[in-house]
Image (tube, rainbow, N blue to C red; front, side, top):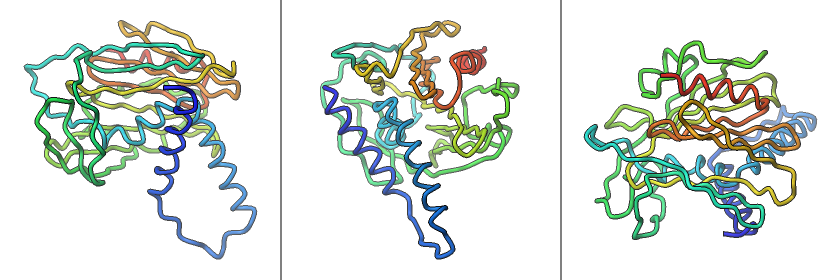
Length: 264
């Protein structure tokens, strides 16, 4: 897939995500407020363009990919495979199993297809649930996030958003948002992988405005991306979870957060 196709993928994902929100006109909004909102949306789109694959994967990930219905007896081997062509870095996360068929069209909103190709297709109804504290969210999130996880100076937890399966009563996709100001924030995103599932991510480094590093976080290989405007992204696999940290933080801060997230 070339750079033009990457941009098309991102633009489609971004536009469709925007279309999921309902905007209600408010006559009290001044032009200044409108300009402020436009600037905020513009910055958000620039940050998302850092990782076109990540944007697409996380916007649609909880819908396109499978539900956590794997039995404890099955312990797949998850890994990441990277490739670089014309400055475009492509990372594929998954089990390494062979896929004989292409992903199907996403189901209607509110349902999730089960994992990979060749498996019988099942679905589970999901619902959104939002929390203000980790103690509240821990009832539906399996991932062991420590209560004393490192938080950069002046940042505060804003919310924890989850997509929860009605049958499993567990989150298949979790996002923690931390805010420092209206335009400074970062997110921790956690996606539980299932057998035969694949997630694509990466970045376009051909313009020399994004640098990439490979780091070791505990026993895990992590991929770090930093843009010229100060946006940092780090992603890695921890057991059968794909974890991403994205936002207005430094490399050092991202490493500290990631280190806490892999503590046993």
